[in-house]
Image (cartoon, rainbow, N blue to C red):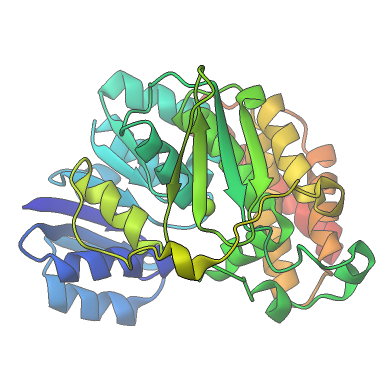
Length: 362
Ligand code: MG
């Protein structure tokens, strides 16, 4: 029986982890269930699964060491910068960390990978693209390769002319063509910030230089990513777009258990691949530049993005202003180092304040 400490149990990914555990109760149980703010949902999950510990971050939590003390897998499905502290705590305890919180590696990639290495923790990708790469590398994060190719659906505005983006609404942005996700990541997929984040994530998960990571638009979301090898061979992972599959695999690999629908090639029709239109989606390039600059730049980018996406969802700014808010915060927040959590938290807070100043004028 594998004991899971699930952080972010009431969110979109967290609920799909719950589905997996419900399906295989003889294989998995929860040692801890933690949510951000939805006390009601947490209460019913606690009654169903009887974890040793449960808590709501809004009401205050026990020390993180205690949350992870007896788990076999720390599943980090919390959203945003707040996920980083959990990932770091689990890494320092030498746990297997199933990482669905991409901000942990975007903001703290250097620190998280250093701590994981120092304490013998292993990071297991949950993001569908990174799970695809992990599978193509036979579940090794240190295997050699020539190039990684991340696929991107292109989001709901792939075909939208640039000048029309000024007028798109939050409802338009939340209508993702192929994946069902939470609000923040749906908007990040519409701006392609999410794909920029995934390049940074791949950089840290697979030790790849940025030059070795390419992104290609693939609107059908059937090919989840590819690994290209020295001899010209490429291995891709294909499947229906269903997050249950990478979530379950993060818990069972190298074993596989029944999970999703079989892929029916004949009913798929043609699969398409095209260049990512960077000129239309500045958030993608902003993320890559921040990733390459390193230090606290990715944390600053992310802090501003969290504020800007919140403001966009409330109708306070237009879609193109998400990128403008990020640019403003990057300019106004002086560069700093990123070698400890405190420095990253400070960068995050400063950047949020700058983004708020840009958006709300205070
Ligand atoms: Mg993804």
